[in-house]
Image (cartoon, rainbow, N blue to C red):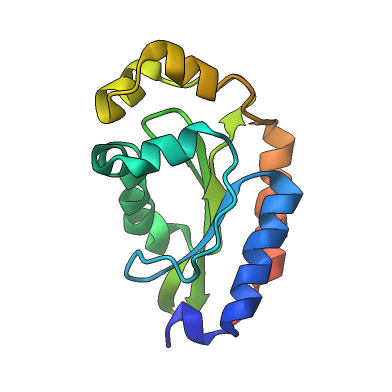
Length: 163
């Protein structure tokens, strides 16, 4: 079974919209092969699309997801919290059907309460100038530790037994 078979495609799109509206995150559902299940996008901030437009930005900054996949079996049903190399939070939970890993649901693109953008890494990965990076990252949302914990509980409840 694949994560895309757990529920209808439009239900996954609705979830991504709901998560984005609830949190502001770049929401996504990713299958066991690391492929997004839907094409829905609503960016959490203006810097993320600038990073994603550049293949180096995708691999150097957005490629952090692979380590979450690697840790998913050890963190069954736990919220995985990490940051990308640019400094954005990555929050997701693994989705399982019995003991079969189906993928991840969650999002990225906001900052931790005291987090900051690593402008030098973004510049190295994308070629954007520091002033442009500062302009694009000037008003990025932040999540408090309690909000992160609440999001983890929400995701667990929302996806408990979905497949």
